[in-house]
Length: 101
Image 1 (cartoon, rainbow, N blue to C red):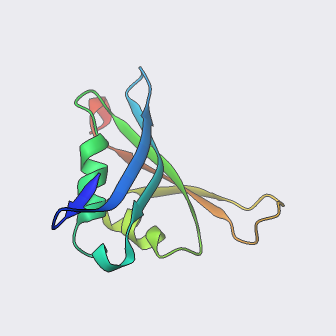
Image 2: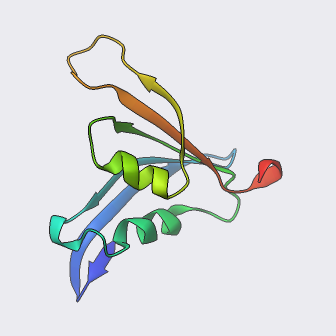
Image 3: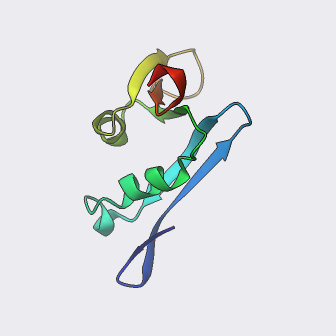
């Protein structure tokens, strides 16, 4: 959880698997708490000692795309399959450990 001045201002939902992959499902930070490194701290908090890869998906029209790039995540592709969504979904990954670091 992200806390600023005693108030809850953000959260992260992530899953881990036994192969060392963490998948970020959602990060949310209150508008007036953005740019205070809360999101970065949340991402750092879910990275385990045995993790070697972080992955996530993000709609391509969101400002969060730049946030993920600034944290060192690399675009693996953009899914633009015809769906009800008008924007594609960017797939990001970041190697954080293991033999590939």
